[in-house]
Image (tube, rainbow, N blue to C red; front, side):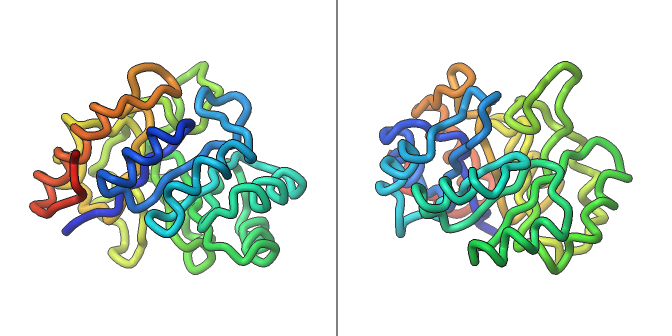
Length: 222
């Protein structure tokens, strides 16, 4: 099965164009000041135009307030919102009602009990994203380049649609797909030469690995 692939933390037109040409189904822009991948909404809006209609444009926020979300939605015009903070089910419902956009809700995973936290969100969010818990000392909820035990997802209800994130790169994505059967992949640091700097060659290698693992063409890989 060909999984969806989201390239997250994009900051340049060149990287956006490369991601889409390789077959990215989703591209993510991060609006979180502590992240090296942080981008201003007006800049994101300009470079996202290269992908509009070709890939889903995702705005990634962390416990953003309504004023910030208003600016992001107005300037970026995203297809989806990704909430990567401590948003409650009620807050997710409010966000969906305000903006009329589907929501991806991210959860940090380390142990089996972490997956129990998704239960109140089932039927509310449109897709889950499972990332590794941040290492000690990190201020970033994601993009830390660390994995979690993917076997934890094997007993997850098959109806739960999620993207797998956390430490994915060209050398482990095949194993990740084999162990989880994830219908979506989210990669950021695994296709970078430095924090926040997308490496076009590494992006291409990642897509080639996904293609080989899924047995299907994922894009032009040019």
